[in-house]
Image 1 (cartoon, rainbow, N blue to C red):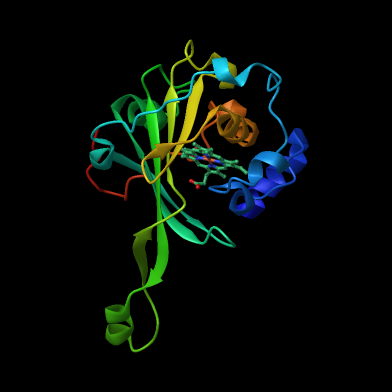
Image 2 (tube, rainbow, N blue to C red):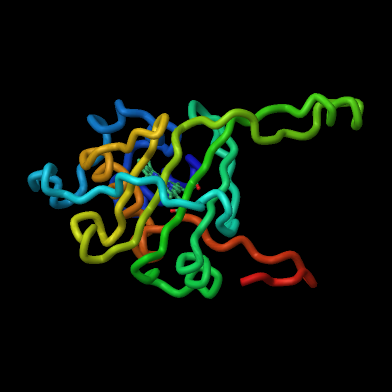
Length: 194
Ligand code: HEC
């Protein structure tokens, strides 16, 4: 993933930092390229501050594995508005769409090693690297491309400065309405939900 970010950055966005350096680390705020408009009064910038109810039961959009310092396993979930749009690849996503990013430690499953006779499976361990959301509201979050970005650490929401840092990196995929993940394809002959 870091490679992908770096490669995309080389395509002209000018990002020097990898996802693992940036995600979930407060120190990134100083180092991140500053989004256009970041000179605005951040105290006036709207940031989501509540964990959306029911997010844990949302639909799986995709999964991701972060290497390096971030070293985690993640699930990307979406509410119905987000999933309907992403499934059909319709951009921009409509207002009301919300995407959640959950992350856990990347742990070897001891029982799997016993079953295979060698280390094999890795599974989700303890939650780490915060709980992140992107909330689509083109009016409220106009200052950050129509998305409100927030990371909850122990239930505490991040601030407007952090939101600008999230926005700056997600600008790499501006052409996909700032959303990196695509909807993971259904298994062949599987039953498509939604
Ligand atoms: C240095 C780049 C970078 C920064 C900074 C960053 N992200 Fe991301 N984000 C990514 C990449 C790459 C992905 C896709 C891989 C993944 O799912 O982890 C992603 C995925 C996501 C997703 C899933 C939807 C999507 O775009 O695929 C959410 C939600 C998200 N990030 C929220 C945030 C929030 C909130 C912040 C700030 C607190 C933030 N991100 C900061 C690079 C970044």
